[in-house]
Each structure stands twice: as structure tokens, then as C-alpha cells.
Length: 149
Image (tube, rainbow, N blue to C red; front, side, top):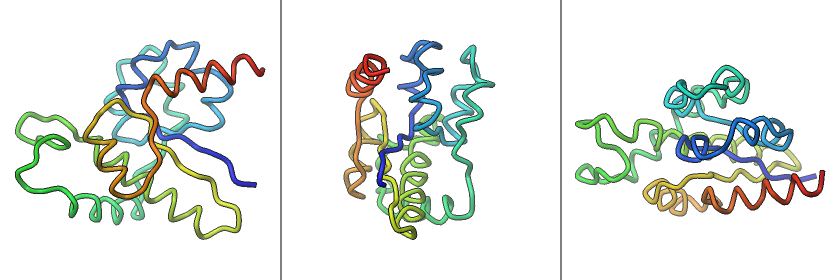
């Protein structure tokens, strides 16, 4: 049976309360890329969030190469190494591509969705036909899940 899984960006994690981040739905269906976890290391429940890590593997790094090939050298909206911004942004897309690749190898793979408020991340995800949600959409989903529980 195909389900939906979610990769959470730091700008979404920071908006959620610790209670929302500890909901069974989040624990069961959400993952956080290693680079995003690094950005979220100052959240009070960072140790709990670490259990949701989507690790940076060789497969993720191969996908990162594809992601970086899509970004123009002069485009600093997604990654700006001079100011140290956006380090996790291409990684979340690479993790989604890796997860989709793994899901496609099985008979009934999950759909992977990127949850972010970063316009550049959302635009890049759309280039790769990855489904996206904003934190507002994700909040509504959590409210539905909470009401159903």
C-alpha cells in the first residue's frame, strides 16, 4: 500500500511546537535530512528529532550532484556559500530524490513530499516533480490527523 512520507525543512520544524513535533504522525511519517538536523540542533527537542534523521548516504550524494547541476552558478537564492546560507536546501531535494528512487525499486513505494517555506526549495522540487507542502498546509494536515486520533 502506497503512503505519503514527508521530509521536513528547518523553517517548518522551527514553527512547530515541541508537542506537534512529537505527534505519532510526525514520528511515523516524517524524516529530517542530516543537514536540516544540524540547522535544528538548537531546538529543545533536537535529540528526539535526531531519531527521524534521513542520513546522508552515497545515494543521497549522487542525487545531490543532479540537484547541483540544475542550479545556475550565479543563482544564490538556493545556496549562497559566501554568506553560509542554504547549506541544507539542496540536500532536502537530494534526499527526496533518493527516497523516490528507493521507493521506485519496490512494488508499492511511498510518495515523498518536501515540506518547506523556502520558495527556492519549492521551485527546485517542482523541477524534479516532487510534491511539496508549505508549513500552513502541513499544519492543516497535522490538525486533521490530531482530530482523527
